[in-house]
Amino acid sequence: MPRDHHILNPMASQETLISLLHLDPTPMDNASIYEKELPPLPNEKPTSSSTASLGLSGSRRGPIYYLTRIQRYSAYTFGFFTGLHLTNTAIIPLIYRSLPYSEPFLLLTRELYQTTFTEPLLVGLPILAHITSGIALRLIRRRQNITRYYGGATPGMWALHHSSTSSSSSSSRSNSHTRVWPAFTNVALSGYVFAPLLASHVFVNRVLPLIVEGDSSNVGLQYVAHGFATTLDQLPWAAYSLLIAVGVGHMVWGAAKFMDFAPPPGWARNTVDRAARKRQRRAAWLLRAAIALVAGTWAAGGLGVVARAGRADGWLGGVYDGMYGWMWQAWGEVWENAVGLVNQVKSYCYAA
Image 1 (cartoon, rainbow, N blue to C red):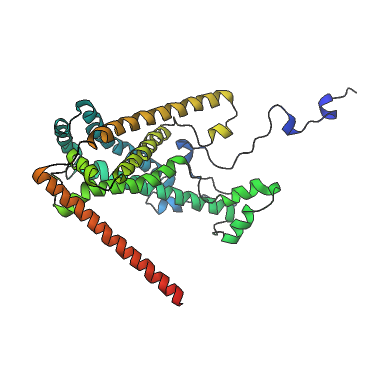
Image 2 (image 1 turned 45 degrees about the vertical axis):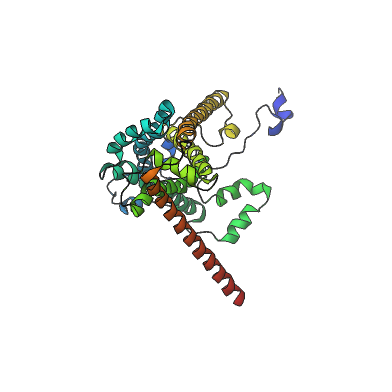
C-alpha cells in the first residue's frame, strides 16, 4: 500500500504557507449587511414584535432596515446644505479674498436653506434624524447581541470581567460573549465627537443672535471674523480647526460607507486576499486624499481668509460685541454655578 507523505509528516498550521487567521466575530462594515436582522436562534420562532412596535407588522423588514435608511438619507439631505455652506464660507472667500465681495453670495443662498420651511427640512430634521437613528441602531444591535449570547438577560459586571480575563484557550469564545455593544468604528467615534462641536457652532451662529437681537439678519462672514478678532487667544482657532477636521472626515468617510466604497474596519489586518487588499488600500487612500482636499479648502477659505478679516467697525461692531459679551457672561455664570455645585457635593460627601 503506498504511503502518503503528507499523512506521515504532518505540519502545524503555523508552519504552513498560509497560517490560520483569528478574526473577531464582528460583522463586516457594509451597509447591506448592517441592514439585515440577526437570524433567530434554533429554539426561537420568528416573531414580528419588533416591527409591530413600530407599526410595521405587515412587513418582514425589521427596525434596523428602516433606521439604516433614515440614517443614510438624512446624511444625503444634510449634504446638500453642507455643499452650499462650503461654497459660501470657504470657496467664494478664497476666490475673492474679500468679505464685502463674498457676503452677497451668502445672503443669496440663505433664501434656499434658511427660511422657515427649508431650514428645519434641510438642516434641523436631518441632523436630529441622523443622530437619533444612529443611537437607536446601536441599542437595537446591543439588545440582539444580549439575546444571542445571554438569552435576553443583561450580564452582570462580574460575568463580563470573568469572561474578559479567562484563559487564552477560550479567548475566541469569551471575546464573542464580551462583545455586547457593536463594534465602535472610527466613523462612529468621529460622529460622537462632531455632534457637540456642531451644536456649539449652531449655538454661536444661529441661537445666540436670536437670543440677544431677536433675529440673525446681521450675522454673516463679518460676524465670524469679529469673533476671531475679539475672542480669547487661540480658542476659536482650535475649535474651528477641530470642527473642520472631524466634521469633514466623518461626512466624507460616512458617505463613502453608505455607497459601499469605504473599506471595512480592520481591513489592513483581516484581509488576506491580495486583490481585495489592494482594492481596499486604493479606496482608503482615495478617501484620505478627498478628506485632505475638502478640509484643506475649508481651512484655507474659512481660517485663511474669513478669520483674518479683522473686527467690524461702527454700529455693527457694537452689535457683535453685545452678542459675544452676552455669551461669555452667560458661560461665566454657568461655570460658577457648576463649580459651586461640585463644592457642595464634596462637602456633603466629606460630612457623610
